[in-house]
Image (cartoon, rainbow, N blue to C red; front, side, top):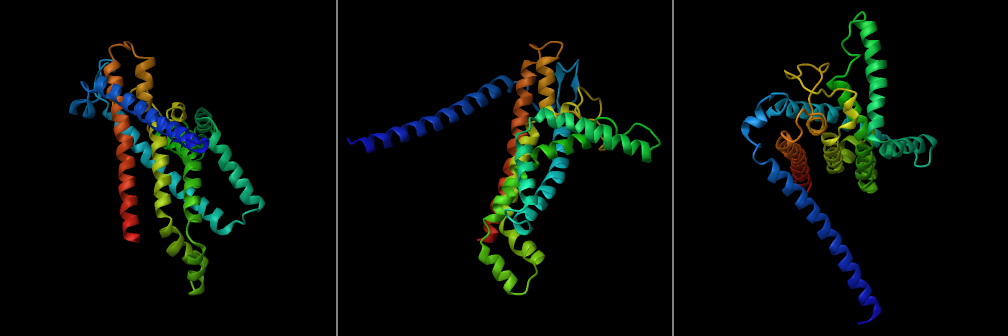
Length: 298
């Protein structure tokens, strides 16, 4: 056996071992979570409020709050990220100062620790924006200058914005230049070309960005520590100015500040199961939508 063949087999072996190792870690992790949380994973657990100092009962408020936060976050992040990507791909010159500045800002945002986003949300959304809204429109009555689901969702939207921008920009750049030129040659305006050609051609990339944003947003805890998550609520949030319970934050609280951590261990595993299922369900829904859009385009 010559040296090149030996090197090739070693590389194949290493890459195959890496794939098997990653799959094994995922399977073991999910198996442990399912095994330890299966006894508490019941309909009552999914639909009831916590009771007895959160050592019994269900996690419905946390499920509801997480889903609501992800929806509001997506409504804020996806359109704004898509508009930014449209500007970068269709209007801004590649080497212009503005384009370079925006890309530098996006790359910087992508590497900022999530806890920093939480502190920013506390200072900007709650203290500055919320404080001014209360002072100007509500005569100083405290309503928006406190943690709530809106500020938490907007903070999470900022956290996920770089993912959306980069994925949508890459998808738009993948649309062939000839399709843009053909549209313009037929008399369409720049904006009509974007609406009728570029966005439909990159819709799968937009959905991919949404999938990645939702996945990260649903599992993050640090940004909502200061901006909206509550330890316990006896009722569901009824407006965007209310605080909310969150699955990730609920797991953190149960594992660090519970009155009896050992007694709540099965609840922690079951809550983790629900968080994973919620994330997988949201992702799977987006994947189905993306696949249907692709089939229609073929």
